[in-house]
Image (tube, rainbow, N blue to C red; front, side):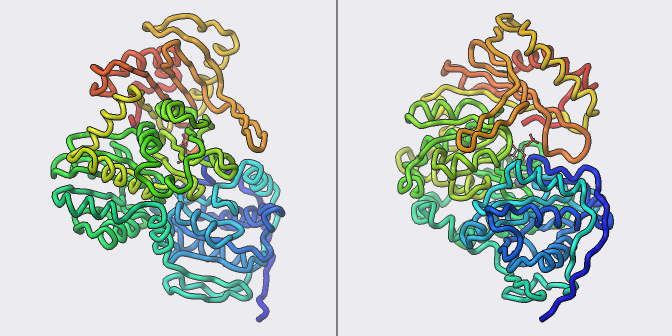
Length: 560
Ligand code: G6P
Ligand code: ZN
């Protein structure tokens, strides 16, 4: 079959620079004529030769079901067909969670994948869309590739599109668009099979069978993980349908902000606390984030979550029993709780910049098996993305394991048990969203000057004595690449820390993130409320950063 291929003249658009996780913009921006085409062409032209390039490539394509997905899928078909891509593996209706795309890329030995999501950002005509490229290892494209994409978008003059009919993604099976083969798959099945190879489903079922009153509530937040959660909890583990909520993916997430934290997953939190649930969990729009809570207001901070998973991994999760745990890693702002586990277990541990892509090299080199970020991301080397449903299953495995030894152990009990072994790293993050860019930049510049002058070193503020101060720089031990300017750190003598950085994922204005962490090894403090425990340090952070005068904000938009 000969397909006619058209060369379309175009002009560069400003700002097509992929951020921490791809290009995220308002839908209206993507809707401008040629905007999406330019970016997809830049992606296709940037698939590295070492990964095989676009000609003859197999690409996995999936998204979180958000508004504008259908249109972008058709663009990908037309441009891929024109670029000589051999095959697209696409989820039914274009829906596949981010971790499931990562798994499919690896399982099918694909060239890479295109993910259509703005993660946890709200969706709908007035909200966000996003496009991200992942490599053959299943992980987000590294900076050399995203920089290449950006360079192309700055000079692009034309793109090539194939004149092929509209593809119907609601039909499972294989179709063709010219020479391009399109395989539409059920994006849930392979992923659930993968989970079965990682976790002990029988042990989990035993736990639920012998604890009939144990109530679980999973919140899909109207994002992509609803069908995954339903299949898992209701069909596989046999829990009642009341164990899942908001499990239907909606293009605008039902108007909700699909970010699993105490603010945006408020409905889940309310129900768990008011309706006597023992365990609650949520995932974000595209399924890579997670939040874990327990009955009676127990909240597992993501920093504690990864530490606790690492602590129990080899006992509670067959995947780690079999493969071992090679090393642990966390992003720089994430609390040091994970380091304490690594030290106790004699494991290597790494501190990387914010952004899941930094874990990939370590995993490929078998130096890291479990990793996490304070931004509600937890995962392991089973894939190269963070994995919300995996983290939830890890927690259920831990609960089943701990309850076998100590029946009746709640999420709260597991937290306290952990603190009694390692001490507690109190941690909180304050977000100031959509602030004016200049004020935020000036604030960071002033802190950089303080680093250069060294004038705060040795001084005490509110009883906290500054030990060191820097702008975090990461030297990747695998490929030797250096990432500078990853966030201001003020580290105190007692290991407490203040971190200030600007978000790399916002789609509007600047977002300032302020992270505070304080360690306690006093058992009398382990059950204290986080905000109260951190109050003195938060005051110091606000004073040192002069955040209010630079941003004009008295209060953060979100506290996690
Ligand atoms: C995404 C990335 C994470 C990152 C988070 C926050 O979820 O995948 O790796 O930690 O965004 O990034 P930001 O730059 O907004 O703090
Ligand atoms: Zn996400």
